[in-house]
Image: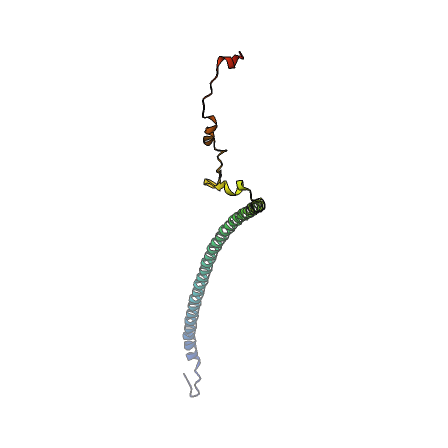
Length: 163
């Protein structure tokens, strides 16, 4: 029984100790269940984090492969353009040399024309088709030389055998 001070007697203690054991067991069970649930949630969070990291790693690998492919294509195109540039530079040099040579020829021809006043080069040489020159001289045209041979050639036996 209980006295006025709030202390319980022995028989009450035994009874309360039995129910306390049940309460303690209940609390232990609840705490263990709570700990299990907490550990399960922690494992789920950890697994989700691992899955997220694996997904991010796969995405990064895909991005890296795409970047590597783009770099390879760009490098190949750079080499092609560099080769084309080298060819074009060589062509520019060659054409510049040809232009300089042609300018020298024109300068030489102009110098000769101005100093000699040659009628052949100034009056009778004209620009023709396809970059060829035509000469307007009567003597050089075989059709215009027919006036020389306008009479038939007659041969007699006396001329041939010397009689």
